[in-house]
Image (cartoon, rainbow, N blue to C red; front, top):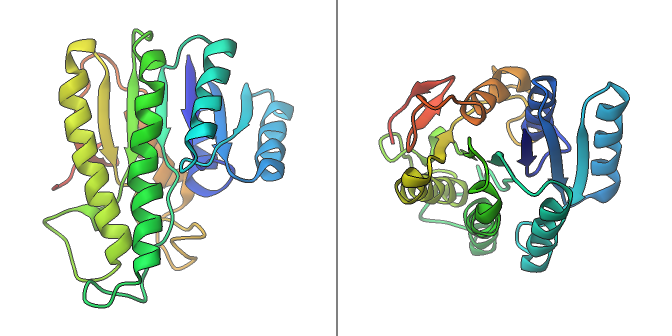
Length: 230
């Protein structure tokens, strides 16, 4: 089984790679920093885990195309895509006082980048008998719980949730399951050390969605494997 995880040389992405590899997945971790990515993959291989690194900036269509070609040539199929790469939890702003540069960067990376990558990888995912797409979202993107704060992050994650629903409907005939996962407030560089959850706890729900059996849900929004409000 082949998995691809974006934004994966630290935090939630790194732990997601670890948990998938421990379940005997071959995992490609991606990120923008080649040195950190290669180092992380090498450490996993030293532990006997089947992990590789490939550089990816999800905002760069050329790098997306390069990654597709690498995956096609090396594996010929993709069973799991985890769209984890994300930026800008903009706590210093609200919807009436946004930083437009941050808004644009957040939407391009958290939403449009994930969308572009997913479309590029679909031909490989469709070759899998158990294709799974996991969009790492957030409760900040829930319309029911929406507040005026973190406008760039919240709107980008709400948009990702729309993408999940649309993809799930489009790919249902193919047997491909697409779900959004909120990992909760996790102790990462973005979440901060005051967060109540460990990266291990946060990644567990992501891995749950990545490894769903054929009877599992599609087109849902989950935390710890349990549905949450859109």
